[in-house]
Length: 301
Image (tube, rainbow, N blue to C red; front, side, top):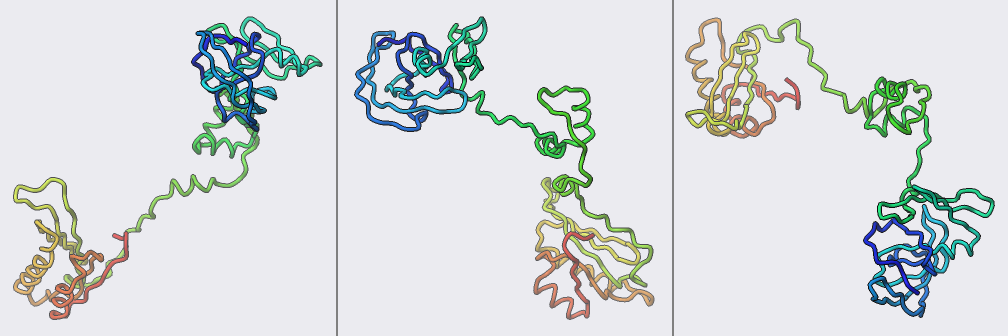
């Protein structure tokens, strides 16, 4: 038996061939069952020959049932024999741009198309796609990347998306993933009164850095110390985080030397749990001066 010249095609394309005596393919994955077949050989259009190795049944979406199809080693085209379709009670009707496979009662079983090289073929992946018929707006809200419902109704009203169904009524409630994705941190309300009654009763400290661009002096960190009562701020620029303790120690000495009769020493300091503050040096120094060291909760001002 002879074949049409070998074609380079997509693996899901099947050609309807009136000159092909049997269904045949070179892709073993199409077969449901396979048995050894000593079926001789197949002659290609260039005169080369390939052996028929296996025989089996093919049943995949988008194609009619193909019993006793041949597996031909090296065959690059998937071929459907029209004569074998006729033996199975099917008929093929060819048109200008497409073709139809009909049952005995005239009902259309499958439709194919005419390719650019003037061959009629079937695409097995065209019918294997699942068609969505859900009209629930919540389902389409999720499929379209959680698009807001207002824009979904605009798409429905203007009919700008092909295949989009008419939506039903929206169920009351809020989309859970949307709510989680749009949540932000709660804002801490500004206090109406001060928790302290005099300067140096509570000192806040924090360290910022490392900064990507160093200063002219090579500083990459900034230590900020704020008095809770007066909001007076001390700022120190540091080369390394380890310098934070020495700067705080120097600040305490300055305050001790500059204090007057109405300004006392530092009572409490408050910082985060950064290791530049939470270490043995800070603890021993604060204990020696009677300073209480408090730590703030994570992600609080």
